[in-house]
Image (cartoon, rainbow, N blue to C red; front, side):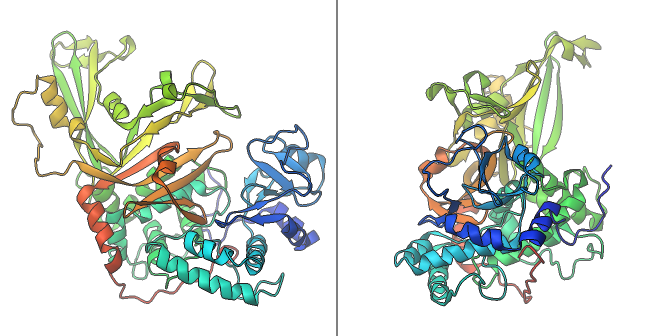
Length: 556
């Protein structure tokens, strides 16, 4: 059982970070500034003086995540950061070289410190001062890291760079569609940020929260020691769409605490699975909204926003191979999990490099995955089911189909599986070809059953010819790397333009970049809703309440 307190007001500070700052103050951050390098698109990284390629001081490796020690400036890979902290007393804090994010070697976890972000931001602004082209580049392409603190940056006089920042922000507002805003990484929370970006841009979810259907100021589900998950999500929608034009990255800390309260077994700064988080959040919103309605958890006609948007229904037909009797059951679903053909995929074990194979043999298609999902499957001899007609256990085959499509279709690709032979988890590194426009007609129960009987035309229970089966993709959550050092990010499609949302950074990308990514979750919406949502972006509902955004200590 979890021993966490029922109320979360602020993240528990890392004791190693507190000890480091107590002893060294901000001197280590200031010394690091000369090693920081900002690319034209706004990404900040650590450049090791004297060498072009950074290597681990223990194994001389240069691939994967590398970390720069704030005390001795030595570099360690993800496999040797803990060893370095154990062998060198007090050398607990390091910086991710590629992403310029603070990392605790002793905790093996990312940590968030506003003073560190202020240091990175000040270096960024100094670079702007000495580059006449940087303001144009960043203004057109980037919604950058949030400038923390109400006062000026303490590390330098940034009056000129502050003026450039105003120019950059103005151009960013006119360049990017409304609702595009980065989310700060609060310590291994890329799994949360990636899913939140998808939820923020799901048209039915956006319309619900921006129409005051859940007003956190009048919500009665909040208490002094218990946060309300829908209220915190409503706060993020308000900050993103009604933030007064503020495009600086937002810190969803209150939402994180609220989710921790709902899922106490996952309440930590450790990396979590994005799909598990997605289901957990929808479940938390469902529970909160239905308490007021006194509805049961498994109510088939649930009117909570999660079920109205994401809920569909699967049909399962189990047919006796002896007499042909078919037993049919229906199950609700919030998403559909699809298997990849692992016989033609590249696999990578925990901590190991992916196995290289021919590019053509390591590629699957989404339509192929859907075909596999609805393909009849013969159940094993150890899975014999009781036949109501034969009145005994019989061999049988099973076939799944989709009886009811949701407004927003979430397709989850099973990239992580447990190897029974090697007794370990592994990731499937296969690339997946997927269409931007998807017709789900072939996978509906009506189509599957009719095909089973030779495409005969007959009345089908629940068949509704008026229901739209055409979908458009609007978000793709991807996973890169291995199980122990992976990273999630989201690609958003707005008005047929793709945007890469990588925590605090947002960049415009070509669709080829999206197609080449290792997609983990794909979000499709009814075609009519997709195009209507794009038309309505310029005339969103206007809130009747005045928004007041309060900074969260240590986070905003």
